[in-house]
Image (cartoon, rainbow over all chains, first blue to last red; front, side, top):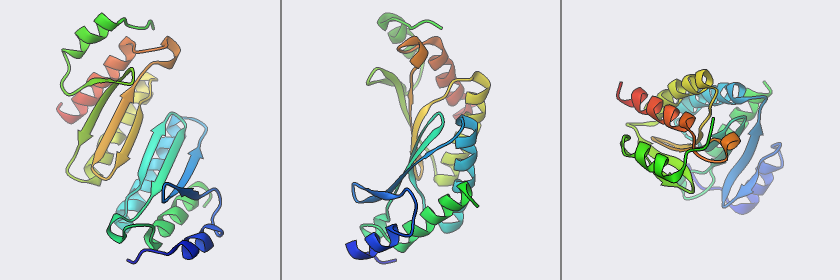
Length: 94
Length: 94
């Protein structure tokens, strides 16, 4: 899986809602009603991540889940990150 | 739930394995075999957190789960943090 160049990342980001670049990684903060809703989201994403064999860096406190995506083996952002990002968005708004 | 003073925190910390103070919060990094094992741990802790109505700040990447515990309503570390810390340790080593 090759690393996307800056213009490819920029172009794909335009197709997404609420994602941006943060320290060279795809970044989004998801906010839910409460901890239970936040963790239900994480549980569904964990299954997705296992299926895609691609895992997020994520931080949770109470109703917030903050995600960073990068592809260490590609040395940057790859198509796998966008695939997982789209998957996360689908979990929230199927 | 009242805030514990420094000597109380110190004394309770001695009873625990692998926990320390980090930025005024109880802190521990758990390492697992892989993402699936790490997330299985998180799933069990999430249930515990809901039962205790006390939630961690936690960060996960692949097989690592880094936890910070504090009691915002007490303005520091309270007995609830130690209860959740002990609960997490029990999940790992019942």
